[in-house]
Image (cartoon, rainbow over all chains, first blue to last red; front, side):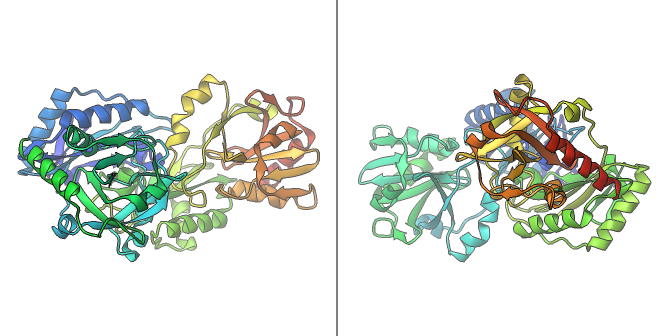
Length: 272
Length: 272
């Protein structure tokens, strides 16, 4: 695997940062993550727009155009000999002289193997547990995942796939994925205090003229009223959710609306 | 300057981590920071106890004894030719194979130059601005300082020295320092939802039999009732605060109780 680091392409094993890096010492870093479908980056433009917005929110200048980044990704994939892969962009506050002040950013593009999930996750759906949390700066895709990783043992003990963040009586998002529910044929998803997922955006596009959509604050008690639920994310696409804490969603199987969206999404990525 | 990295001592410029490090990619890291006084680490035992507690909170094993760490610091200071210096401990979730799962930690000890502040900060006191924030996991000294760094331009524009975090109507702490106020001769400081500072602990020890102390939740409206205020931190010791937002503390000069504590603290570190 190959990696782009501050202007040069290096083998991943040689890709290092100095210990004075502000992403490492102070979590001052933004990132984004996309995957390929059919060997081509999926929704690159949308991911880069979000990544630029995150970097700008941290006042970190990104000195590469979309076209330059597209070319770099192409070269990384070719050299890495990967057909389908994950691509991670990371920009940090740079090698700070005083461990606090941002300087010239460090910027990386890393090609990664895609994670594999059991087919059961899509065929039978997954379980989530809720946890009270809201990202520090929800609109910026920062590297702040300490809480999510700290919860991993609890998720494992609960036999759950992942955690659904709720806060102030509202349903928000997963640590790395967006959350949707159906109330009969109406699709409902939260809109504020979350990171706006790219797969979430695709699903909302696909739903036009198919389902009525409500993008709004989702109350925690609406989880018990959901007839279907699912999560969306770059590596998971559309993945059904059949249980949240002790509450079974619908009849506990993957519902027809979710199946329809999974089909629509599959067709959509097939055209990438 | 020299740095300890996973068992070896290297010149600081060679101290690097791999880009798969979970501290860098996911902010999954704990740290601590001490300084020397008279060439010797100040309150090493207390700092290491807190560092071990932070690492344990993140389930990161630290495989060095206090004695081993004391010896490593001694060697780092000697090789670096530093009399007085800052010493930073960092432990991360290691080089993760899937960018999410903690593995064998990366552990560093970095010797750093101490920051210098103008003598005016102690003679005339500093200004703070308040901001609504509470650390994600207040009891763990994690590397999560994105919010603090993001606020730096606002602090500069306000002509302030730093930011005082308040949340849910309570006064908490600064990003890197603890906060105290006097109501006449009674010393008041918050106790919950903050990181318990080592200099804070020293000041509380020094106040025994000198001032009545109330360690308790501090309401935001008590800021206007304060007759004196100060902050404490490793690099700042006891530093007077004379203004918070638009509110002048006392008569806007360094008060007698704060002066007394500054003297007591100076005597105390002189004995290190």
